[in-house]
Length: 176
Image 1: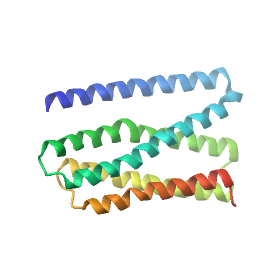
Image 2: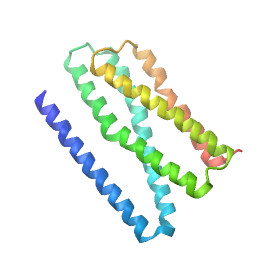
Image 3: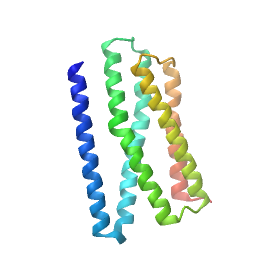
Image 4: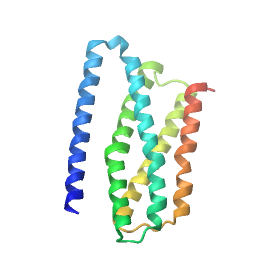
């Protein structure tokens, strides 16, 4: 278990270093070409959304298998490490970057106006609520306190998918 903890700290250190480099490069991009920053911000936002969604789709799938694993088994312990790392090193940073750049784009490009944008922000808030639910579930699984069956997690796996589809349609089609 000590090697797993050490590995987790090393991974967290690498993630922190990558985030610091990312912030530094983003600041340089803005400083170097403020007028062209909008397109870079949009690209960064889309990349972050993809990373966030990948994690949001994968984490409930891990829960499906973890729910059927015997408490205290090697399999259960492996799922705990996978879930915690996925959440802390990918999903959480991706959500933060998504929100930061998304809000900046909404302000800079649209002045926070447009019915489609308001609906999108509401759905991203719902996605963030789902993120919170999954985060709390990681803690419950980690403490061997999950009370939900695998079927529940199969259903929960679909929630981010449905939200993502509606959000993408709002962004591309801008129906109102």
